[in-house]
Image (cartoon, rainbow, N blue to C red; front, side, top):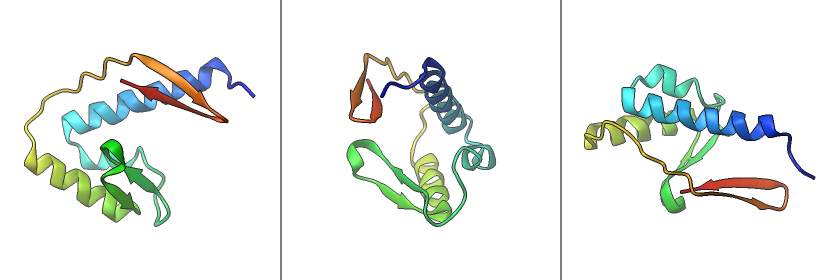
Length: 91
């Protein structure tokens, strides 16, 4: 089953919004990108960081922001692959 083109565009738009909020460090806008609740899961790079629930996601973002000084992300998307019914974007 293939996904409509607009699904890919929406995913990339969400990633752009996530990136912008990470750079701007506006915690309320950042948290608005996630479904609120205790069942929302966020994983960091290479699945090393795992946050379950809104409070854990907020705490991780605030910790990351205290420990970093980056002013931008440069994803340089190189490929998009399809694994079964899921698609992943990779840099």
